Image (cartoon, rainbow, N blue to C red; front, top):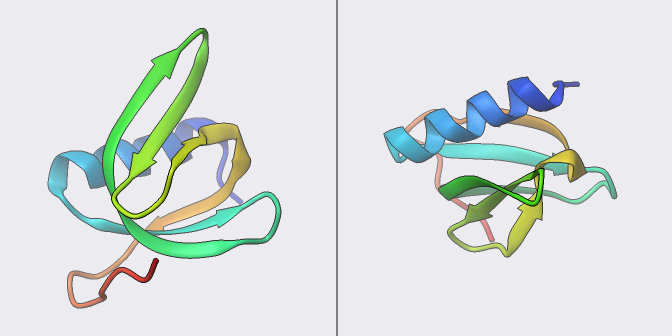
Length: 74
C-alpha cells in the first residue's frame, strides 16, 4: 500500500506525462484512468481523473503507473 505522498507523486507524474494509472480506493473500487489535475484545497489534496469525479487523495489506498499499451477503463 502506498502512503499519501507516494500516491501524490504517482498521480502528479501521470498528470504531467499524460499517462494512465491503476487506482484502488478505500471502499475496494478499482479503475484505470488518466489524471487531469492534482491540487490542494482547504488543506486537503484532490485528484481529477479523465473519466471519474474528483477524488480525495486519502481515499486512494493504492496507485501505480500503467504501461503505455494499456487502455483506460471507466
